[in-house]
Image 1 (cartoon, rainbow, N blue to C red):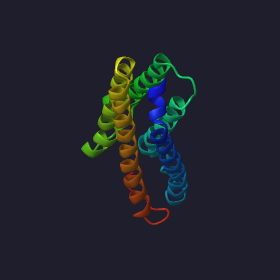
Image 2: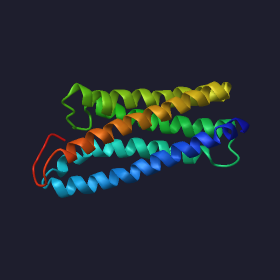
Image 3: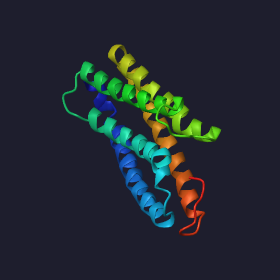
Length: 172
């Protein structure tokens, strides 16, 4: 699919950003574990979704850089990841995963915005089957949105970790 070749540099840039920031998240997780004894129950609520958003971008860029994609295989890769992401973020939104996102900003950053980004991936994937460039533009917007949400969440987590002294509990 020649249309994907035009996006190769974008995918490489997104992969590098997602991989680097994903690595930094593990540093934050290590710092959080050292500073907060007994706060491991909050890891799935705040850290796991952020890692998943970075990993989603990294995984999708890897899938889209496979050689010899057809329009159908690229569409299937994009839509499959988008649907899996919609289920994951939708579960957080509906509270089906038994997580408690109390604050409105948490619901926005961990459920609503990611759901919209994954929705863009699905919509872009479907559109790319018939109109590749507009569809891939929507996919790029979805990937950038996921990256932006993950960066926002990482910043929130990093500020929270940095704002407490070692051994003291805090909100996230």
